[in-house]
Length: 237
Image (tube, rainbow, N blue to C red; front, side):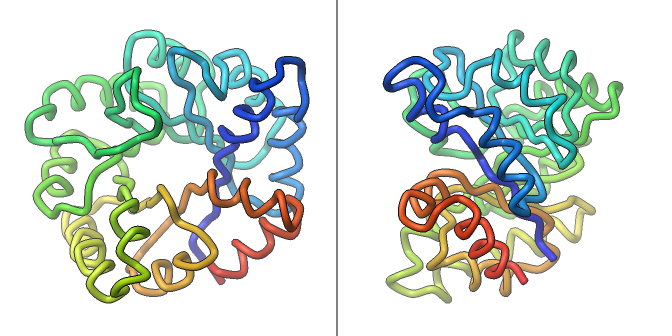
């Protein structure tokens, strides 16, 4: 079964809006694991507008499930990952001023840089994943960097799903097959929700993990965190 990794950034966003420690991000990470999530994802940014670097250090010893840290591999990020040693690091090419991740890597243009960064993480036995658009060539070039996996950026699928789900998923299916051909593991994330997740997980071959945050936390406002996580897990079964 495809694993569900819960991105808890939005919980930190709510906390930061008022200061203090409500809601408690550390407790949220523990509860997500308790309620069945098979992974916890965080994406710290330099301005710390949601997850803070301190949060990442404090979460690591509290959870037993997979810990995935996403981010742009700037020196501060690299140093943090090497000290924490999460199970997985997902490299995302977002600049400091973007609201949310909005594109995958050009793995041809940045191949040498990615190869260098990934070699450092691999020396510390940290699994690596590269955030990519559903483009066969970008997937194939990603394999040359030495990464273990790619994560497909699914915003386009989510946007086009209500219009024509078969057309929306076609490039993702092709990219997934390309990943299989070059021996890469496959993750996916961004704007997946209870409406479009089932079809995606059923159609995409060898999908190892999905990372979901914004939609899941939004659903939890109405259904509660435990029920929401169980609903997402059901979509993946």
